[in-house]
Length: 93
Image (cartoon, rainbow, N blue to C red):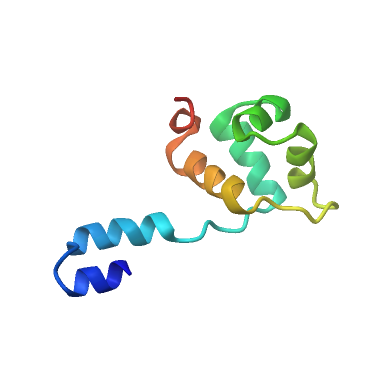
């Protein structure tokens, strides 16, 4: 839809680029990557980090455990992407 609006001059090329960036799917987060974001970027325990993401601490534990085979998806993955790029302060509103 945004591409069509841009094609017809209703949406600027710059705005189209921003929309594409916002709508791109987040990357797949490995257990190591989740743990690194939590410890290096957020500098939080699993429990506190889980509270920021509005998930249970056991969920964060599973994400960080290679044996579980679980990884964040959907909104949680998008939040991790934001934290990774902009820091935990982006969620502290």
